Length: 100
Image: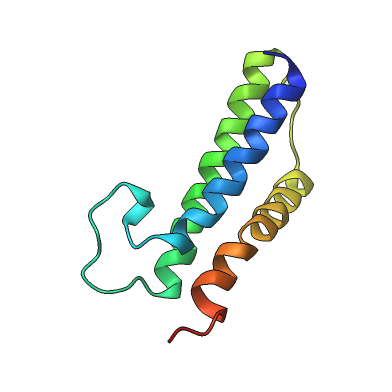
């Protein structure tokens, strides 16, 4: 695989992972179904776990390509903002759309 294919895979993984907490009621999408609906706090905690997982996946892919660069605070700030942007459709679906 070349570098651009891995980048698209990472972006797709980030898009899916950012929306997972908002589209299902399972813990990390694999755990048991919660008896009550997950509150926003649970969803944000799960969102942070997915954020760390996607960052780790990106770092792993970068290591695998053999060109890992040291990252400062700006990288993590931008990654968090990008992940929050990716999570917007799931958040709107879960919390802002009116349900009957």
